[in-house]
Length: 73
Image (tube, rainbow, N blue to C red):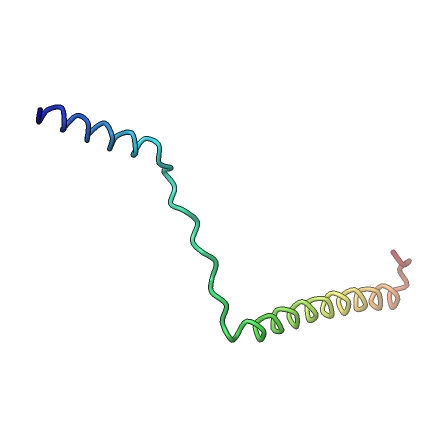
């Protein structure tokens, strides 16, 4: 009878291990904090600064081309 219990438990354990996924579950998203609105504003400010920098670089390049007498692109 003990052998029967051993094999039953062993087969149940092997079945559970065989059916489980090998990757751990995804971690939960970070909890909201009181600083979230501030970090969102900082992210928006960085995006605006990036846009301003791109436009300034484009304008600088256009002015340099105009000073050299190149045709506009």
